[in-house]
Length: 190
Image 1 (cartoon, rainbow, N blue to C red):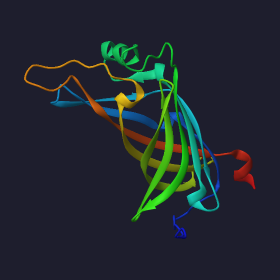
Image 2: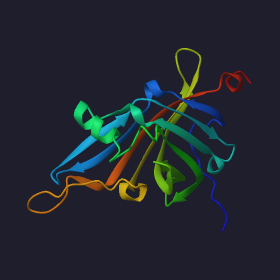
Image 3: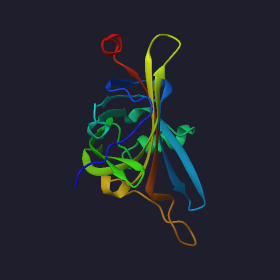
């Protein structure tokens, strides 16, 4: 089986640094079986390498788990605590891509996500938002990715039953990622 060529308008091969000020690493969990709670991490860094063949591209990201923000200080403490992320013992989580593939017309990034020292494969649906110059002389790229994990696979098993059935926090957690990245200066001048 041969890989089909992927056409991405304006595609630029190179090494890109993720811009945390213009990117978002977030998550959504069901709460009390009736609502969704959203959160994000405010500190992270990473690099994307767009290869000449887009299907050979890669990405690595390190997230500071102590930067969790759910817009509720008490909940932030719970999520950072030993029952959930245990940030005192695991101050970072990482994602490392292992490949890119097509699923019909869609792109999927396969990778390994490590939380609390436990690593599992995670596939992310990828959208390439574009490539182009900014008004300040840099070259930018934009990507969106979504996926889902089961938090219990990472040793995050704390929960509380609620009256009438169900639990306080869902096992399934949605991942929502928006990335703006900057082409390395050396490559932009070539």
